[in-house]
Image (tube, rainbow, N blue to C red; front, side):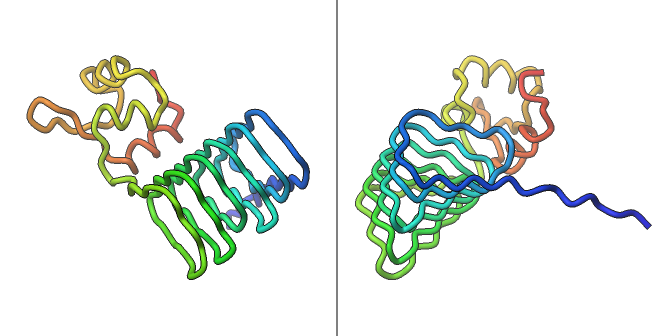
Length: 167
């Protein structure tokens, strides 16, 4: 009988005033209760507590907002706005849950299951020429549609997880 080793959960609880860039390449559970200004990139879960004030560009997998956020939010899996949330900025979630009482001032554009070349370049934060080169050489999971390429987001996320990017 095989036993799976329990993965130790990485939890970071920030209850301070911070400024700068926080970037996590490994999955974490990050909770911000204080003030933060800058850029946040989180794999795993990000919770912005009800007392938090955040002015940032945020990219994450699963994001829960209970406090105030000013800036752009990209949630690759799910964005949840709790009743105490006040968001002023554009949101781009794969899935969205807005509780009654939450305030959203900005635009919402759902992340689609398929991305075009330009959207994938932004999603991966690489230049368009690299995307085209990878698609034409078969290095990235892609489907040809006429003269254009389309990329399934789940396949891209799986490809990223495999570490094959750029190989």
